[in-house]
Image (cartoon, rainbow, N blue to C red):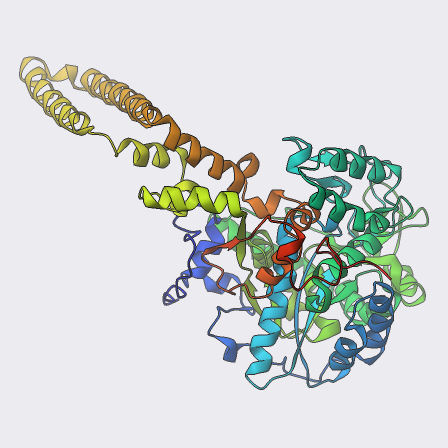
Length: 563
């Protein structure tokens, strides 16, 4: 594959250069190894012409669109009917993204995904192709530990959780938040840094009541936060959606040998190229789950001779599984590798917006499109953002005046130490290193003239000397960096804000925390984010409070109240 030129630079650091993107996203952004995604087409902003309607008959989305209009109206989505009407038109292109139904609307990148979905839909519509944005809520997943975790920095350095999972195999979307959610919210409220933060939390209290289920709470918060900039929300357990999924789920079952073989071939190719598999499965393990009579979601494993078993107990005939699918569509649930092809079969997706981890999953999931005859869409990597309040913006402005930009702040600690140390005269280290290299070479030549058998021993000694010097050099550089403690303190404070717990901010900060901190200013900034996936986008926000929220929905907190 020929290399694709990098996308146009935005104002933020290059994520690849900073080491903040995994290996596969870096390859794909550079136009390398794109065959690992075929038949999916990896696109970038500026390549909108490669986003097109799937070939073949258009998906009949009318029934699902009607059900989505009703569901989104219950979430109080202000554009539910209008978006559903656009979706029902078979000529409309569909752009879709999604995420699990996390507590407090999940990590910040959930909002980034939703905003990017709307931005891509707008970009395609401006080019004369009407497009609707959808957000798939993965409510069938049973990863409770992930959705029941929320990080609110005012409440302490550790993420808060709803406790141990009492029902490990039950899909989380329909489960109640429970009293633990109210206790968590009260703890965060008690630690609130100011009255604006506290009032914004209070405005969301109703959506976090103990009797709310995860999916409903998530959806209502997404609508509350994004308003008319919210995509149409798709609950993966919606009955009409499950009905519409039956044909493709049936093909995944009936063509189980082809599906198993295609997944195996994709995995083998990834391993041949030294790419770490996101999903490791044994031969015969289906990318499907069965939700049993106890409500538990268990992996299906084909046993041959027309049979199957469930991981953890239970077995049956494939014919009975197909009958159950027709009778109770909600009983069969796609796994992480089958979810994209099911989603795209139902909606006739033109473009999927994916995070870096999901992009890696697609190198395996892509094999299912041909196996079950679903047209493959284009895919794009989502943009990434970092939030800077007025205080952090001042820190960065001061550092930039000293020649230290955001990319340097986000660089690896050793590189950052080197940059800070470079402000001092450390030329003596380079000179000493050159002298040591020369001395080692001289000694190597000398010992050879005395006794050639000493060569192996000297190689080891020379290597030890070099390692010892390198260790000492690192210590000198770190010590030099610490000499300017004020500057270093500013750098480390900003770094901790941008990389809390050593991870990108948008992967740690909970969406509710971000909205409580910045109010509608965050929504306005997200509404105009660049679609560029290569550069981290700093969003400059003001913590000044409600006076700055000139577009807030007639209340002082910056978060619209419920009727």
